[in-house]
Image (tube, rainbow, N blue to C red):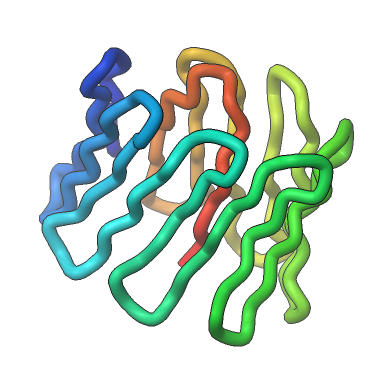
Length: 142
């Protein structure tokens, strides 16, 4: 369970070894005490980057796009039925609105409920509440 305390210094903490502090503002940041750091730069060209081998830039707009330098590309087509698609076997449709939803055809479901207390949930053992302040965000699925 990763609680999020909203505010200027919102924080996503894990009872395990991971802590993901989220500092809201122009340059929101999600950091891990492990080897991964995912800075999120809000604005027209929000970006989620990893210090590892993956980079998932999210360019907002009508055709926002999440791309990986690896084998996965997740284009996001904004609109009522936003969609994140993979050239592989996974499709993540995103239905915008108060209860936007990212659904995987695989075993994972990552629901995003927009608003002050947006939430990313998994049907597994992980629950990641996210405070998005009403914004859509690029989601990196590892």
